[in-house]
Length: 307
Image (cartoon, rainbow, N blue to C red; front, side, top):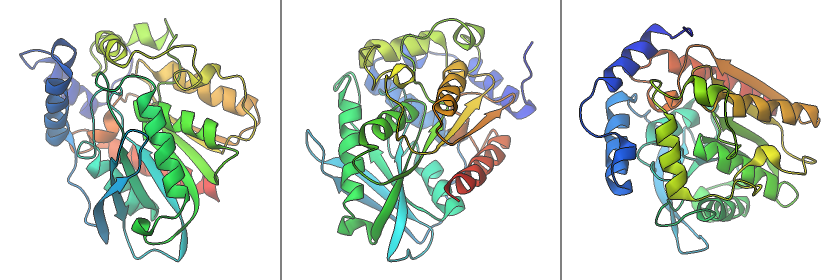
């Protein structure tokens, strides 16, 4: 049996014992409501900040909702951490990741801009990536809404958002100033099989059946560099990377492999794995208390990467 942290086991057992349909057994709109309720029950309260405000970001199919977080009055020129939420490209939004983004702003001191990209099945692949590319370009232009000049960007995201951050970093690496990419248990290989996908297919929050449902909604092309950044042909010029994985995550091996590819291609990389931890833990820091230390460790890693 793999090692499972005590607080992780308590939450996993509680969720696995819940009656009623699972997210992959309902329609996307219902699943979004279920996810929002789950995060509300498990997440820590959002930090109080100097500024938290909603934004509208120009997108390829119309304005995108965004949210800015600042822990203090920013300098005239400063970096921005652009955050893409997780949720299998189908669920998740500004609200599910509000506490996490606020905490990242508080711990890092960076301006954080969260992006509410279009979701599948209403907007299947590659709509989410197109929206995130547009958002990163908008941030790079130092729009007045941010309140300071943007000296460079850190592209960050969890799960599906980690996929989006990796894809955007790859496409914009020669176009805009990128300081780092921070990939939190990212999905970077749509053609993956075996390994952690099989070992943790059931019982650890993210399941094989759930991932299959996400893919059916999102309809990605597994061979496309946006869907599977792990198999992209070019690796030159990518920004330094922080890759975080969890030992009990079906996506664990993809994150490990991506970090290894970055290192083998000469990209400065910090790799961190949380032993006994599960996928989605960054949105469950209220119930899985040890996840707070995992987040603080990543922020320390990010500061070291940027230094």
